[in-house]
Length: 197
Ligand SMILES: Cc1cc2nc3c(=O)[nH]c(=O)nc-3n(C[C@H](O)[C@H](O)[C@H](O)COP(=O)(O)O)c2cc1C
Image (tube, rainbow, N blue to C red; front, side):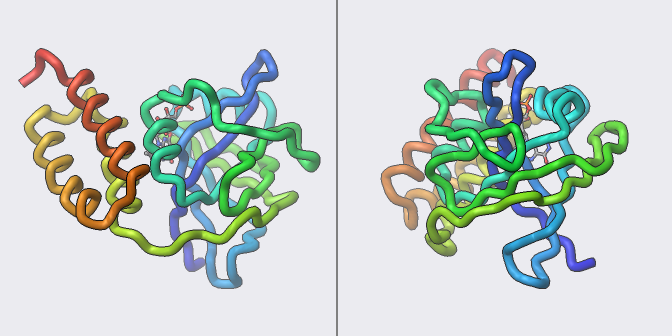
């Protein structure tokens, strides 16, 4: 299988019925275009996303080019949540502003070691708007956001060196939203590593 991992936003439903929004990778086969029939999700064992998927078997995966949203979601700074609407094919939520969404029904869950392996069928999908296109700043934000989620177990020096490297294409090729996302991630990493060396 010609598999690659798309980074996107996954919504699931919490026990109290409210939506949960997280950044998550989804393995897809892009050979036949973008209307994938299945996806594989790999949430870590300690995530709310996995708990919600185990309980409800349903989720919605979003392709987006909104780097600021991705950065905010990665560090848990989505207050308020982005605008969401209920989906019909699954009991879930789709982002009003995204490029495409895929409603997912879980077919199989392998236990987390340390990540679960979740095969999901796409039961509905929609294109909302076109993907903007390649942009170095947006892709650098994806990398910086991953780095931020590792802030608690990577050394402060290594984090800051990598962030400084990623800041260059963001400042050179990004717009206001990408620069705002960078500032958000830089502040988060600074706070998370305060007092460490
Ligand atoms: C680009 C990107 C991709 C990510 N992919 C995954 C993933 O595949 N599995 C995972 O468990 N966490 C992934 N994360 C980290 C989660 O977004 C983060 O840990 C989040 O808090 C999920 O936990 P939660 O469900 O408890 O909110 C990713 C983060 C980023 C920035």
